[in-house]
Image 1 (cartoon, helix red, strand yellow):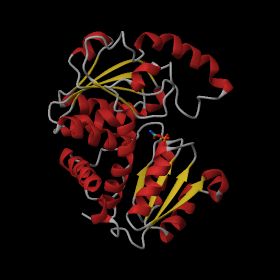
Image 2 (cartoon, helix red, strand yellow):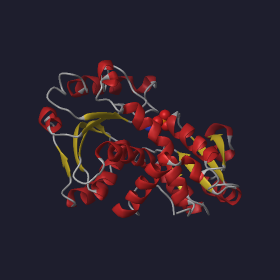
Image 3 (cartoon, protein in one colour):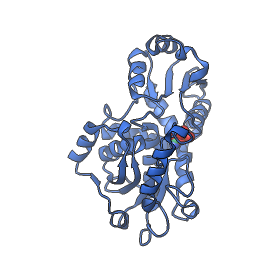
Length: 304
Ligand code: CP
């Protein structure tokens, strides 16, 4: 079993992972030898702080071992992804990959003898969504009929949130004036619409009024953020998105918890004061990456 997105998982299976994450957070010592002798290969084409650290720490705390591989320092740069993965999966027990293209991740999953975890590609970010569900369940005690509003660019994080939320009973409304085309997955959105739990609007104030959680993310994908060739598009997005910034004025009258998957771009998608606001649970949310990583690893390695 791989974790590329949530297409192969039922709401019940997603909840099993979420509940396991919460249980592991409460009783870490119970799991300290669960992955003894197991090795995770973590290969990154893009930068990362949380995904890398949380999975590496998760392996250590579960009694296993993780190998960090910068794509540029490996022979994946010279050879076929299929062949290199055939080898890798014969020496490790699980692979976490943050690749630029979902199509390359699909090749990797096809070639691998062991589970492959999507560490964020242009379409999905499933490991982040599990941490988000853990965070929401901790705050509300349940996920049924909880209301989440996602404000920003429709992107990979947004796709995985929509997919995960609608499968477990969370009502999700997106306020996304820009659609990041590389992330487009119409089938995912169609499935989400069928549940009646997914809506989209441009009326930010109305959307956040009764929200339990308001969530935002970067307006520019990480691989383009510092790219001079992308500067014009970055400027266009900033101009168009500024009215949708998470700030005091836009959240006036809302008691929603504030979420962000990080890294944060202060003063862009969120004002600095809202990061420190008592309603902000951003750092707790990021801490939960560790427990979600542990729960995902145990699930994929058949440990519950
Ligand atoms: N949220 C997230 O995936 O963080 P990193 O990009 O730092 O891994």
